[in-house]
Image (tube, rainbow, N blue to C red; front, side, top):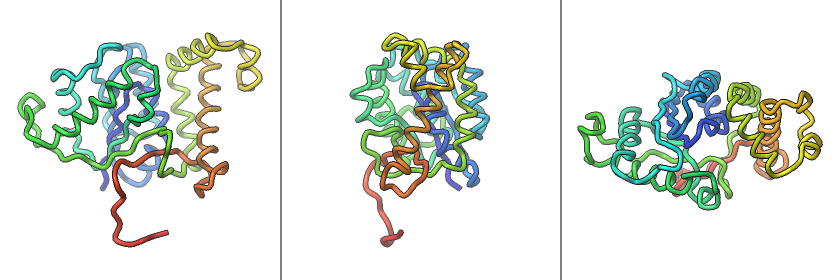
Length: 247
């Protein structure tokens, strides 16, 4: 049985990967999730969203502060302990290439932090300090929302679950709406987000994210040559090794 770990920078990323998570759970796989940075008021919302998707055993909140992510041992210990404790076969994490161009706080450092934590998790680095768990080798890595995907997950049968999880993230949805309104007008947003009819910021954020997730899946599905209808895109790290060429 495959063991999957979703390493999220922010809680929304769990829902962004909600299609792959829900498909893994439906296939009988175990999915764990951790969030590096999350405000206290958002934690129950993220946990409820993860429950809807089928994440096992709740969400690990690593409680690193915004704007203060670094590569110091104290931060790395938290991630290494998590990896050794959950012992994933597959890790989902932010795409380092995408992170270089993302001006959200800490993205670039997080990409390096995760890579370094994966590297030392497989060696005898600070075993006792990291919970006493045995070292765990680097698993297969999939980068979420990459600029150049090399694989997609068909999520047509679980998109409704992904969007239901999204509705739980009221704080994130409100924050997203406020951010959009700093860059454009309510009139323009109403023209592209027809579900925003009540004037509420939370509704704007939820309906906007719903549009984005669906559009991204269509872009990597019917609007592409991927063969998917609704495709959730990923970039697998490294070279695919196969016994033979398969369809």
